[in-house]
Image 1 (cartoon, rainbow, N blue to C red):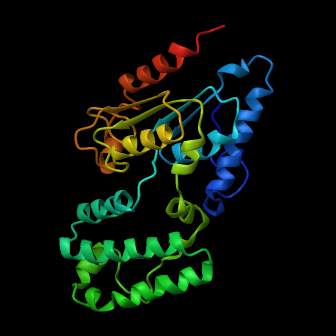
Image 2: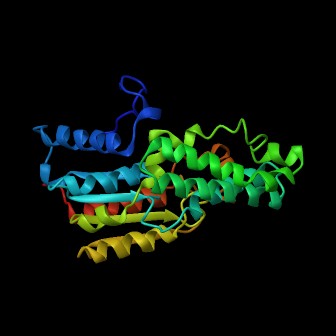
Image 3: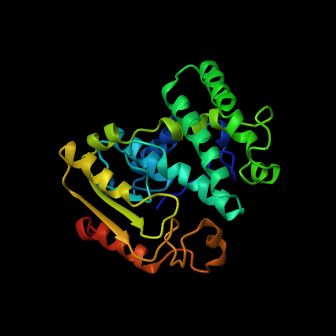
Length: 270
């Protein structure tokens, strides 16, 4: 098994925050090429496993690797049509911070409109201008919120609101990511897993992933929703991200066994 650090971590070079999905895709393909050149590796059994954002990168990379034997997607984003799952993550964090529903609604509406602007607008300066307009349009609604509520949804001042992170290469990649076309090109067998208590990646992704694979003519896939597991595939009580560090289990043995059994079932040792 080959694992590598993110850009800028350990001995890896580069800047993670300035990299886009296309760079991460090239990193994954470089890893596959490296394995294929190792004499002790059976090139007919090389697969790719990706979790969450790593699953998105795996989906993008897989069509460019003709010899890929299998693909395992763990809580990977599928070709969903809107930003509901992403916006829900922000809403949940504001709610956990004690924000009122009215304040959450205002902030999430701003986020969703800004996200659509960035997804549709290719020109970065034009995108910035349009996001600023989204903020100006929300001014009257924000003014109705108390100072405390504005603070709890991180919208204390529209003039000083830092939206630069939305326009960063990495986050723009998330907003502009479309899994449908690459999924339709994947010919290797696929295992897609999601925790039933995943609060970050809705299980609807499994259906969308399967539909895109089938539309491309690939019917050699398995999708499973695993009861009681969160986004990190830990056995969880609520599934909230706040719970992650409170769980001693790194990853559920059930999930590990499902992955290993599926891989070994069709790629026996030679």
